[in-house]
Image (cartoon, rainbow, N blue to C red; front, side, top):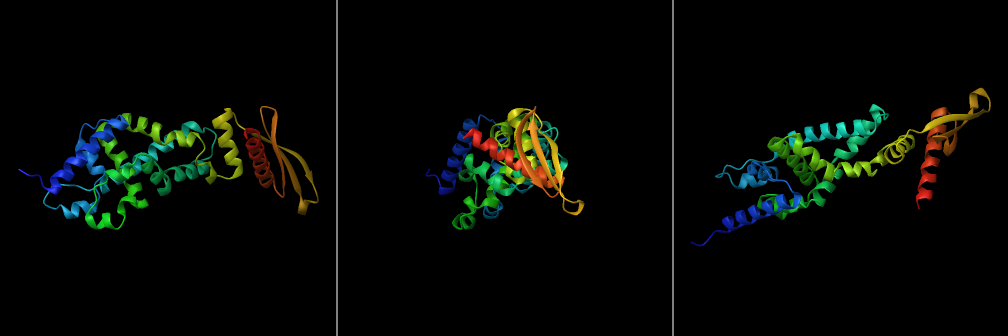
Amino acid sequence: MKKTNRERYSERKDMEFEQFQETMDIRFQNESLLKQAFTHSSYVNEHRRKPYEDNERLEFLGDAVLELTVSQFLYKTYPVMSEGELTKLRAAVVCEPSLVTFANELEFGKLILLGKGEEMTGGRMRPALLADVFESFVGALYLDQGMEAVIPFLERVVFPKISAGAFSHVMDFKSQLQEYVQRELKGAPTYCILEEKGPAHHKEFVTEVSLNGTVLGRGAGRSKKEAEQFAAQMALENIKQQSN
């Protein structure tokens, strides 16, 4: 008996999901969760006679799991970073453009089950859709195998980028320097006011930032905070020049 186009499509997708699991070295105990993670609501709407479920609830769960796991990683990795800077860094990691990057690197787009209308309008490459699918996959993996599977997955896909400084641009210069020093040099920079000059209403502060006695940079500003920012900026520029 000749197979229908829908049956051939279903078989092809099954093979793609099988190959995906082999490539990722991840084996779902409940493969229906894996398929649900990649099932867009438009596909469900066009296949109402079959018990398909879209990925929106998994997306909700995956978003929470990502927030928690990334928060935990940042908390442990940067022990002296302030709550405000940790929040900024986490937001950069879990924002839509970042999730789209992760999804594209894993070629999630080709696995998505889409309705014909969504497919024809370029939905497979739509950023919001790709970001949602990444969250859905994390949610599905969590439901299937718990944090024991989610953490290793993120250690391969997300955490190395954080450790490489891919998201530090969202922070001010002082925080960027602190993040870099903690990550690469395993220490914490210290700031020292070298000089205060000018009248009380128009003071200028000269600040030096150092690490274990080695001067990294100096800066001047109308306040201590401004001087520290300029010193950190100079330190980052010096480090960049030395590494080139």
